[in-house]
Image (cartoon, rainbow, N blue to C red; front, top):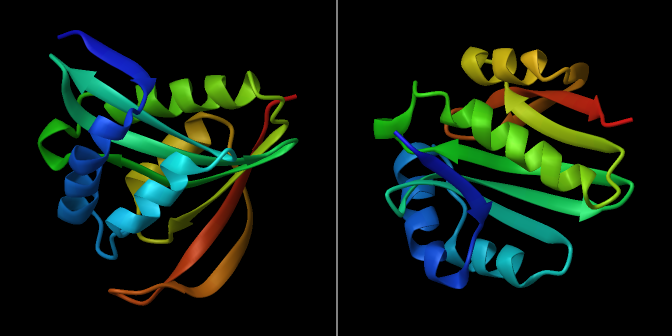
Length: 147
C-alpha cells in the first residue's frame, strides 16, 4: 500500500470533517476546520491512500512554538502505522517552519496515542483537570523539543 502525506487543500475539508465527526467524541465544527485552513498560523496535513483521505493533523504555529490540537486516523485505517507516519510528517513540517517545541494534550485514557507520542520523544509536562468532555477526563500535557 502506498500512502501519501501532503498539505490539505480546500477540497479536502469535507472528508477531514467527516473523519473528525466519525472518530472524535467531541468533534471540531466545519467552521473550525475552515478557520484553521484559512489561517496563516496553521497547517492541515493529510495522509491518503489512492487519493482517499485516511487521516489528518492540524498544527498551529507561532514559532518558535507549535501546538498539535488534532491528529486523527479514520477508524478503518487504524493499525496500519498511519498515525506514526502522519506524526513524523507533521513534526518534519514544523521543523521547516522554525518550530523549536511542539505541545499537545492527550486524554489520560488514550494509551495508544500516549505511547506513540512517547516513541517520538514527547515528554509529559503536566496535567489539565477535566480538560475533555464526552466523557469528562483529564488531559496529559506533552511537549517535544525539535532542537
